[in-house]
Image 1 (tube, rainbow, N blue to C red):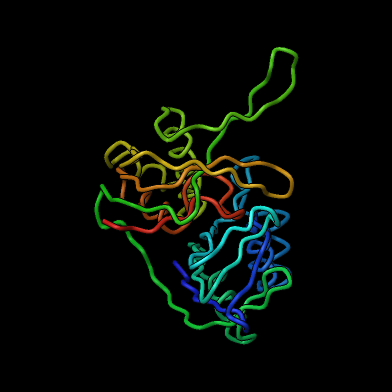
Image 2: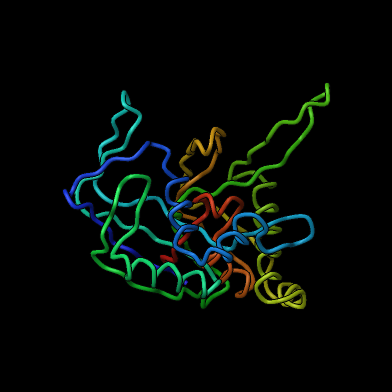
Length: 250
């Protein structure tokens, strides 16, 4: 489910640090029931040794000015935020709390709700075109000759990008639908993700770590259930940190 929020500051102008993903993530945890919030933050949905939160969110969309010298971004007028998750109680908690409190707090900024809408996106076809609402990121942790770890991020035109996105979607599908869902994937066409134009690279700072991601328009091909997961649970890793949020455009 996509929850589409239009938010506005009392004085019509507000500013946040340039790298504000943590502020949105914290706000979404804060509106959950305390026990569920603790589960999401500290445990998550388990797939082997991996943890999944099964939600993602977009960048803030609206008019803005980037003030590089101050390392802040100043928004002018209303902004739109898309929150996406297949976990219905998560979406309901966001809606109920925002309606009850008449807004969302990002750091010290209070934003009131101007409009709220929901949208259940489904693939409907085994080949769809999507637009990223926040960058997609996938990576591998490798080792240097001296034994030190390093992170290798992959470009959308690299083979490893497609394979890692596919593996991540398979795990999410099994968490949502159960282990038997893996058999469904084998019945559909082979999964593929192809950029339709040159993707834009983004470097996002999250709690002191630089994360590389890519945004743009992509064609996704594959099993319908897998594509539905991409639309509603996000694509790639670090979804709960604000990566991999998509919307269907064709």
